[in-house]
Image (cartoon, rainbow, N blue to C red; front, top):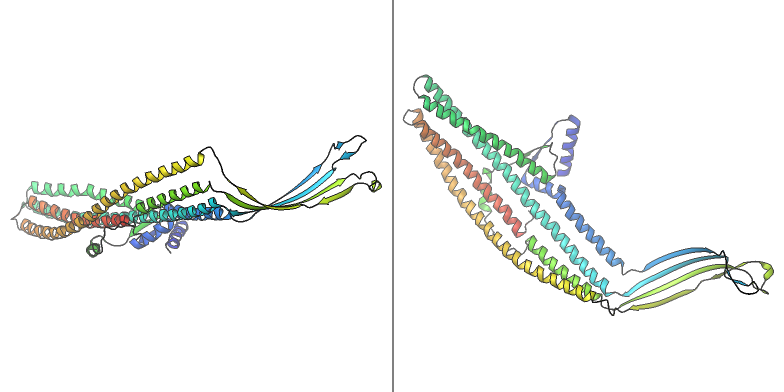
Length: 435
């Protein structure tokens, strides 16, 4: 569905020469990334490739049939004393060969190896999807944070602009000092670079999201939702948290790699076993022979056709191969020992990542609660300062300080929500959740 929407946007761009626009929810962005991102497509093609590999191995157990044909012309034939020659002037031959494995232990082991290779490719594809979903979520939340911050800064700019206008009016009537006016104007000027920087961060964040979704740069995107509106999601997100990492893609990949090496060891050991196969051959040969004396010499050359057919079985027993097979087995055992150590260390790393993610989640949630109270307090403090300043009982420094505290509290509140959602995306990646 999202691919159709993307196609329509491109069609609109081509028809009108203007930038198309897409509105994306978080679910839409994830679905589009999973269907269009090249990393996921490559992983899916890799799964398909190992399906073909398995079919190739299975084909080694099927009968193998081949055919060949030849023509031979004798320029000089062998002769005996008396002018008697042997051999044919023209020889036609057609041959067919059939072979069938009856006992092929190395092929059987290779088929088991292919199953493990397929499982590893499937897990790699799952890991790609999990990592991509986490990155898409973070990019999406980053856009929401930047847009929310821009909204807060613009509200602050409007508030400060109103203060500047009021101070200019008071200054013109001699009710405010030039210092108060300059202080208000400086605060307004200091906000504008921050607003420009935030606008730039929004554009960069959208470019990153477009890259994950494989959306052309010319298409404008608009994300749906507000960061502050996800407060309830933050509160509900701490339910059902677990430290179970059995589905972690990195750990499962290492497990499958170890299983893959064990399968390779069995394949290497199977090369020491005997193999048994059946074979058959059929040949149809035609020779034009010079007639011998007394055997129809007046009749001229005649073709003689033969069609021998042979069948049999062949037993192959490996005896000595220069110690290559033994050393191959030792090499694989060495790799198995290495991967076992890597798994142990990776499990420790994942456990640390899990504890860190859980700590980040709980810290961000408590920070959000604290900032939520701080925002309410800062708004009340600004309201009081504004009333005092307009009544002539407060100073411009007091008003500016209260306004900055309110802006910072609102930004910190949005940042706390973003930190939680980002930590939740990382937590989902660690525990192996695709969505």
